[in-house]
Image (cartoon, rainbow, N blue to C red; front, side, top):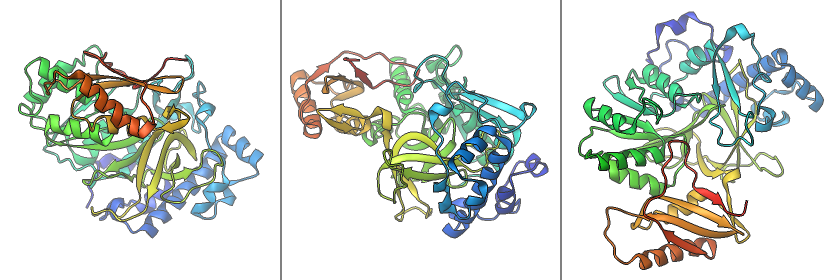
Length: 449
């Protein structure tokens, strides 16, 4: 039986959650048959559409102008009848989707600003107590988040403004019973060296952070005589907040000596997907979100296997309902079997739509190019792609663990390896060290903007 914190049973869940997630639930949603999952998702979406239409003027006016109403949602596929929600509809408008009285608001988060176009156009996410402490916690992922009550979890993610750290904080404490150490990611008290000392002193088993910060922590450890592999007791790592290529992930696994699993979510939508032991795509968090893939040009829903834009509907959020929200990421749904025990759809990501790099008339995912770059052992821990007139310049460090006196041969290896993909690399610049940032890492720089 799935154990739950006792206070949840005294509070009212969404009707769909109340029906499908009773207190004596024996089987987690990860193992439900597909028909049962779809039945829950249909009832949850029907409930949230009716709630948004009744309680939010913006949704009601939007649906009326499109000629649709909650009564048009008669089966799960009918969600395609309803309009999309765009990021620009939310920028700088914190109260636009508020669908509960202000007195019922429990928590507000703000976007990190990485996709904001100007000051003051951040996106806010508003939650009621029921949203975050009742409905979200009622739907657990005990198989996917495989920590135990004996584990010490280091959460090296931003606790300021963003929802990332505090959401995982709740998930580990409630979902697995693990003890959490809120080290944060940079900031006044979140010194990276102190984080390493805490990890070592407490013999922490789990580290959750972003890929670049995990790399940065290893470098700080190396500079201060702390071996993140030999001096730590990690069992595995969770990487989230920023994407990375598989070869970058393998570099981190070699450095730390443990497996690194990816977790995909967003400020607005919460949990979207989690990697299993196979590390081959994200199993969609189908208790939390309904995922569609659309053609970003025609807006048609695409079949599994076809790459398009990720669209999510949060299944229980009432303070700020998100219905058919365009995340801005590219990916495709894989409905094939997975060797693990979870027979649910997986999501494979292909980077952000806005981050695609145009080189000599073709678009490339920066993570695809990163993967090719990190297939070269001599490449160091940081790099930058510079674009000028659709030509590619690569700045990179040398791997400090490999001694090479022939820098020119490394430059040619990089030029040839990446050139096979993009057609031609204008230049490869080997630098002593690129600047590190405690914010989200900027890997692409446009010199002609």
